[in-house]
Image 1 (cartoon, helix red, strand yellow):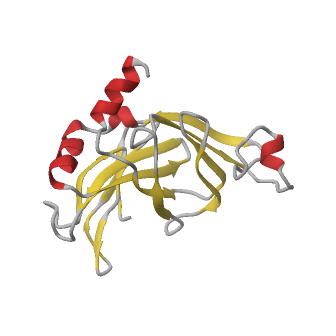
Image 2 (cartoon, rainbow, N blue to C red):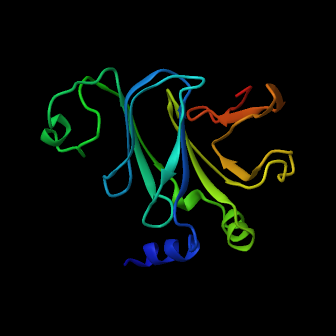
Length: 191
């Protein structure tokens, strides 16, 4: 194992995967997300805002992927073994033109304070990916009991490129936000 990987393994010790949340700010088709090994981390034929999201679990060699390559297309094609014939993992989407193709770091961005708090006090790690037309946004937090976070939500150490709004009984108690991938402008949202 390389010195870089050894250091990353030490930094992320105790993190063995977690909850994966993926959503999109626009209608996206043929979404493929690959990890640093080229393995398919997530795929969706289509996602649309505001409620078109996925919540599931994931595992990764270091607890989170070192980086992710995110791509989406204008359309998808379907044929038996079509992805495999193109050198892609079997469940990957293919066809049409690739409209977005971005590689983003993940593991190196997770704050030490979050990792140390997780080791001391527990909580479920959430890796969040939001697809924006100008590139993917990466976020993270620790999930604990409802009302336990300083803002009254259940999410601690929320950070990265975006955070969802805190909504209770249909009311926005804290606006969400994201950092525009091209302009770095912080934009507030009600979702």
